[in-house]
Length: 112
Image (cartoon, rainbow, N blue to C red):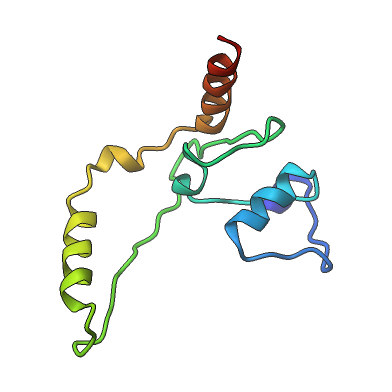
Protein backbone atom coordinates (compact mmCIF):
# COMPACT_ATOMS: atom_id res chain seq x y z
CA UNK A 1 0.00 0.00 0.00
CA UNK A 2 2.75 2.45 0.91
CA UNK A 3 4.57 1.63 -2.34
CA UNK A 4 1.51 2.83 -4.29
CA UNK A 5 2.24 6.36 -3.00
CA UNK A 6 5.79 6.24 -4.30
CA UNK A 7 7.26 5.52 -0.87
CA UNK A 8 10.23 3.20 -0.64
CA UNK A 9 11.46 1.55 2.53
CA UNK A 10 14.82 2.70 3.82
CA UNK A 11 16.35 -0.08 5.90
CA UNK A 12 17.95 2.39 8.31
CA UNK A 13 14.56 3.73 9.40
CA UNK A 14 12.19 1.26 11.02
CA UNK A 15 9.99 1.44 14.08
CA UNK A 16 7.32 -0.57 15.84
CA UNK A 17 6.24 1.94 18.48
CA UNK A 18 3.16 3.93 17.46
CA UNK A 19 4.63 7.08 18.98
CA UNK A 20 7.91 6.61 17.07
CA UNK A 21 5.98 6.09 13.83
CA UNK A 22 3.96 9.28 14.41
CA UNK A 23 7.15 11.23 15.11
CA UNK A 24 8.82 9.88 11.96
CA UNK A 25 5.84 11.00 9.88
CA UNK A 26 5.85 14.43 11.55
CA UNK A 27 9.57 14.75 10.72
CA UNK A 28 8.88 13.93 7.04
CA UNK A 29 10.88 10.70 7.11
CA UNK A 30 8.01 8.33 6.45
CA UNK A 31 4.39 7.40 6.03
CA UNK A 32 2.53 4.76 7.99
CA UNK A 33 -0.77 3.05 8.63
CA UNK A 34 -2.15 3.55 12.13
CA UNK A 35 -5.29 2.36 13.89
CA UNK A 36 -7.82 5.16 14.40
CA UNK A 37 -7.49 5.00 18.19
CA UNK A 38 -3.79 5.89 17.86
CA UNK A 39 -4.60 9.26 16.29
CA UNK A 40 -7.91 10.35 17.78
CA UNK A 41 -7.93 13.13 20.36
CA UNK A 42 -6.59 13.62 22.96
CA UNK A 43 -3.49 12.27 21.17
CA UNK A 44 -1.35 15.22 20.08
CA UNK A 45 -0.93 15.75 16.35
CA UNK A 46 1.75 17.66 14.46
CA UNK A 47 0.36 20.47 12.25
CA UNK A 48 1.93 18.99 9.10
CA UNK A 49 0.38 15.52 9.59
CA UNK A 50 -2.73 14.68 7.58
CA UNK A 51 -4.87 11.64 8.23
CA UNK A 52 -6.65 9.89 5.40
CA UNK A 53 -9.29 7.23 5.79
CA UNK A 54 -9.81 4.26 3.51
CA UNK A 55 -12.47 4.89 0.87
CA UNK A 56 -13.48 1.26 0.33
CA UNK A 57 -13.11 -1.89 2.36
CA UNK A 58 -11.26 -0.49 5.34
CA UNK A 59 -8.92 -3.00 6.94
CA UNK A 60 -9.99 -4.45 10.26
CA UNK A 61 -8.58 -6.56 13.03
CA UNK A 62 -9.80 -8.67 15.91
CA UNK A 63 -8.34 -8.12 19.36
CA UNK A 64 -8.52 -10.62 22.21
CA UNK A 65 -7.68 -10.60 25.91
CA UNK A 66 -6.10 -13.72 27.35
CA UNK A 67 -4.85 -14.38 30.87
CA UNK A 68 -3.85 -17.30 33.09
CA UNK A 69 -6.57 -18.78 35.29
CA UNK A 70 -4.17 -18.56 38.23
CA UNK A 71 -3.44 -14.83 37.96
CA UNK A 72 -4.36 -12.64 40.91
CA UNK A 73 -5.54 -10.08 38.35
CA UNK A 74 -8.29 -12.42 37.09
CA UNK A 75 -11.30 -10.53 38.54
CA UNK A 76 -9.93 -7.19 37.34
CA UNK A 77 -9.18 -8.51 33.85
CA UNK A 78 -12.64 -10.10 33.61
CA UNK A 79 -14.27 -6.76 34.53
CA UNK A 80 -12.00 -4.87 32.11
CA UNK A 81 -13.00 -7.21 29.28
CA UNK A 82 -16.68 -6.57 30.08
CA UNK A 83 -16.16 -2.80 30.05
CA UNK A 84 -14.39 -3.01 26.69
CA UNK A 85 -17.16 -5.20 25.22
CA UNK A 86 -19.76 -2.65 26.36
CA UNK A 87 -18.07 0.31 24.64
CA UNK A 88 -20.29 1.90 21.99
CA UNK A 89 -19.30 1.02 18.40
CA UNK A 90 -19.34 4.75 17.57
CA UNK A 91 -16.18 5.11 19.65
CA UNK A 92 -14.34 3.34 16.85
CA UNK A 93 -15.99 5.15 13.95
CA UNK A 94 -13.42 6.38 11.47
CA UNK A 95 -12.85 10.11 11.36
CA UNK A 96 -10.47 10.71 8.43
CA UNK A 97 -9.10 14.02 9.64
CA UNK A 98 -9.78 13.83 13.36
CA UNK A 99 -6.22 14.96 13.97
CA UNK A 100 -6.70 18.12 11.93
CA UNK A 101 -10.06 18.85 13.59
CA UNK A 102 -8.50 18.45 17.03
CA UNK A 103 -5.59 20.74 16.11
CA UNK A 104 -7.99 23.40 14.82
CA UNK A 105 -10.08 23.18 17.99
CA UNK A 106 -6.96 23.50 20.18
CA UNK A 107 -5.74 26.50 18.16
CA UNK A 108 -9.14 28.17 18.48
CA UNK A 109 -9.14 27.56 22.22
CA UNK A 110 -5.65 29.06 22.58
CA UNK A 111 -6.48 32.14 20.50
CA UNK A 112 -9.83 32.84 22.17
